[in-house]
Image (cartoon, rainbow, N blue to C red; front, side, top):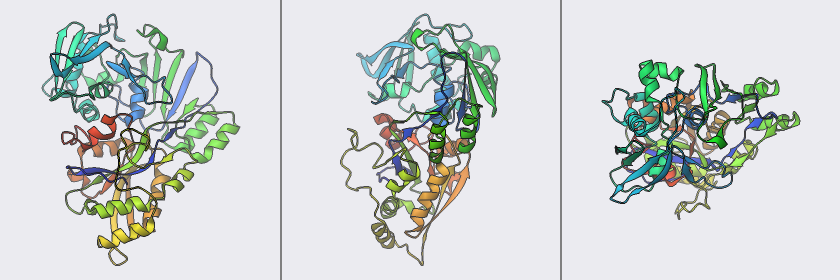
Length: 462
């Protein structure tokens, strides 16, 4: 549990495993045909433009159906991706107003419904997220995406293919926020009359278009043969997304040919998958598996830094990596130690149960007064790795130093909704923390949206 000083009540602690490895398994396949993906999710992510259910939602119902003004260069497998042009061909700080960024938009792009992408579409999409009195304002998308774009405060149309997006101050992280904002079709929304209908017949500018969406069952996507980026036009004939939250059932589905691709197979299934001829793809990437702590309000022992340090010292991260079959690295903070953003922390994360017991005793806890805490966790979910056995491992570690940890196990999206409500919401009173994995590939993701005073929920995670 990495210690951080924060001015609000939600603290990020317990970075248990960092630099996690992406470990999908897939059957051998060629171009064309149908790719069936077994997701870790229990439902199809929403298709309105700001998908729910975390990174997996963005991956399967964001990047497929939609584009944003800029993208990450996902061809960079071994380095943190750079920002590259997407629906904006050029972007730069406004030389006349450093609080703004100028985006020069790509011409000739059309939505799946045939309508034209232009500056009006960009402004319309900003207002669907941030302008509460706009007809198209969608509380669901605003809640889902708001914490990723806290710096966006102003926007204006300059001409048909140029817009300005700005904040309260010059913001070098603006591109890292804009990358999450996928552009939905205003014309399709007007035609269908609202977001509920749009979610079943979505229209973006992305490389795939939706053929069928059946909540909790499947989504079927077809190639966008007119996609503006010829190099990224899909080679598949069809893409099917299937929610399979149980890891063992995902493995069985892959082995029996029901799906061609799964993510996060249980570590003990990897050898079996390889022996069956499946391809296991792994790649380290900046991802942490933390607990987000409640530091203020009633019944909050985690406000004591000695307690937070003790919990950190009680966890054997090296053994947790063994439990995961080596598919992770022990975390030492929000980012890996070789990151230029790691800094020079004075508290070193390590496994030291004796020091953990000493700190707990100093804080007033012991056999006659054990520390009792309750964490919300999920049974599965995007980036959650193997949440049940991992949390049980942590529970056992903490028990060995005299801490009684209990869990409230919920569905992944319910956990994310609790996180968005914040630690002071009445529904959080019985909780001391929640376990929510997250990517930390940029300074904005790793620090700004967690520690900025302007990033309280739902605008951030502070």
